[in-house]
Image (cartoon, rainbow, N blue to C red):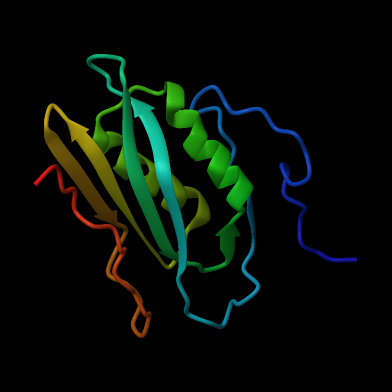
Length: 152
């Protein structure tokens, strides 16, 4: 029998939360407490709503973090990110808000998020945020997302 809590969503049919505020993120103990390592989540089909027009905005999000005591459970993260489909917010607010919520709840050693937003009004908007400088000795690879290239 393990002392590790069972995440609330695993193995269960779970509806998409109606909003990011209603979404619950699950965390489990970090199995590698004595190691400094990085975890990457990529959400290449992230969607939220434009607060001005109500039309969908699309982004490729990349979330990198160095865990401390906990790691985020991936299904709960997927549901949290999916809850933005009905959330109206500017690119900057959405991207930074996701990073801040993860840092506030999970308390990683370090976290960064890159929001690579597809053009709105002909202008692609990329938003980057990190909680602090990366821990010493952490390998931090490039996020690997090319800048937007239109026709040409």
